[in-house]
Length: 528
Image 1 (cartoon, rainbow, N blue to C red):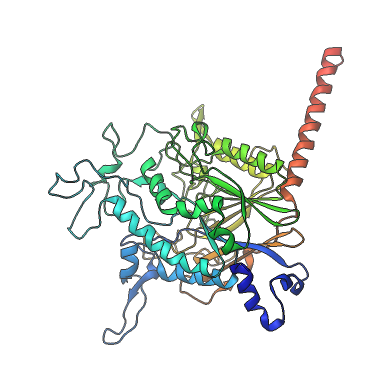
Image 2 (cartoon, helix red, strand yellow; image 1 turned 180 degrees about the horizontal axis):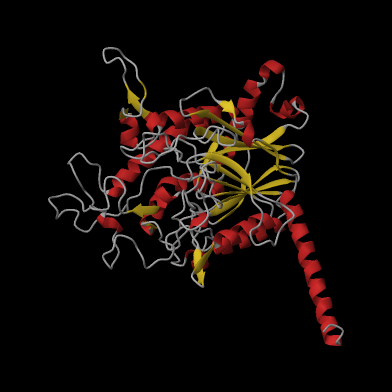
């Protein structure tokens, strides 16, 4: 008996139900489930105001959230919002999903984890060593301990039947020249390129002073490869989840995205990958993890690799497709109630685009600029073609929305985007008094959950229907509740991927017939 079956048997013993009898407890029972969240890291010395602590009674024990207090020392050391993330993990444990997909920003990172050439020459200190002798350096060591702390937090989930699947975020893959403990005036020397600038302008899409490097991608691999490798070995994975991972893809350089997606051709194995799970007869689920900041092509999705991966999955008879990345395809405007705000390009807008839509091109005609996001559009068109659902983080909030194919090609299904970058990072919507020109967060619908720590749980039902529930708690750590605004009773229908493929094929066939008939009429001279 595997771990999940044992836990289910113990839980349902009082009702006289064993593992095989769970399905009889519901009219359309859940046969498989997964949770997803991202962004548990915080910023050194820059936590959200609600994670600052003040002691109103210095002579007594205790503390309370404060706008002007001191960051919890543990959080400042490990750069993780331990209270929020631990509360989320406890809630996920209670729901007992088979999988947890963590959508990036696992660590604060933002260094470049290499061993500098003058490790020994600069007074016995590494090149990236700054300020006091108590600093943890080099960047490699600093990031290793953050990964280790995060791995320790998730470890209990494996004992309760939930396997954790990691997704790389920009804080894992990128180096930010001015991130703590550095600044724009005293930058991280490891982010320099050959020309001496602080960003690598030889690679495209470097719009923010943050650049992905192979060393950062290697660091993610070093710290997560055991979790991902077991998709092939199926030792721990099958014992924890009760299912075997099938058809893993992207776990070798030859099967991972290549130069057509990364430009640089840097190895993307274990950063972008996929696998199947046969949840039941006729219910073959396909899970895809993508690196949205690959070294050499920051802020993009691997559309070419995804096209081939989706095609192969559809040919295997996959019923439903779920994609997990860090950056959203469509930025959520938490300031939409404020006049003049926009998440459309350019980035000078307030708050401006922050996801895959932030990688855009500008065309100016007669002095009037227009903007387009070709990679984002191609990515979402692919999501629509196969009826997939996309889960992301990056924006430090929670939001569920639908978006049509921007190219207008596939209109039969309008896919869902689920943003759950609400795992503990400082909220995007800031409190008055904590940043210049902040407006008090709008708590009126649909913005009442913008400052909630939250996660999403997806349930696969025996009928094949897919549903979504979002759970969370306020920035003042109120009791966990169901965020019903974002619940979706039918996130996907049974066999949605195959339905979408069939509809797309019919549409292509019809278009081809129309084109052929038009060409025939032209050839016959019947059309002028």
